[in-house]
Image (cartoon, rainbow, N blue to C red; front, top):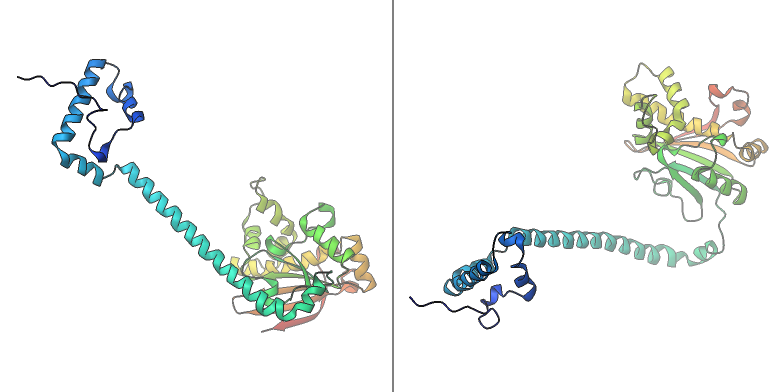
Length: 311
């Protein structure tokens, strides 16, 4: 029987679909592939058999080329998913780009003089405190145009009392009332408010690390008044009652700020409440009656006037 002469990888390469680069060849010396008990002669013999088999069985090489390992397929699928996500995100911002360009063409350029004045400063008549809910944009609902309303939005449109210390809401209030000298502060609540629902659902003892809980607890007085006045109603009806009650509580809290209370007392600043029901698209508006409210105890709530209902 004729002996097979040793085959050199450098002179007798593997078929093109499975050419082994130098780094791959070095892996054949690894004990992780061949095991710790294989000796150098056995490794050389194994390489010899692998090379001979691929030369005599081209179908095997072709099959290996046609059917990549599962890991390779997973990587390809992952890449395709990332491409799809990128294209989806691109489409989303393309839409926003078109909206901006439409605004520039039909709003900005057609009212250029107005926007040039706004570039020099603002003098809004309103300060609006609204919920961060995506369904209740004050500008979309009430038609506020650029320069007409200084707006801050938070979870459940709450106003913390003065003694609670700094927050983004009272920082905005200070700037609007003392620097911009707005004439009206409008607190807008709405139907199906998730923040109020969280307030009404939470237990007295809960996760103190929750940002949401630590914020909506500002409305606890509204919750207590709701439980006392509407305990016979369903939970959904109680939430709706609390949505309106929390607006009045925020109006009461506004009076705890000395510089707000002073301007309201002098008649140069008015405080208003508003409630938008997006289920049937109605809007309620009312104004705090300072003279009557100042005679009430804190737990008695507020008195209102100039109530309007738009439907």
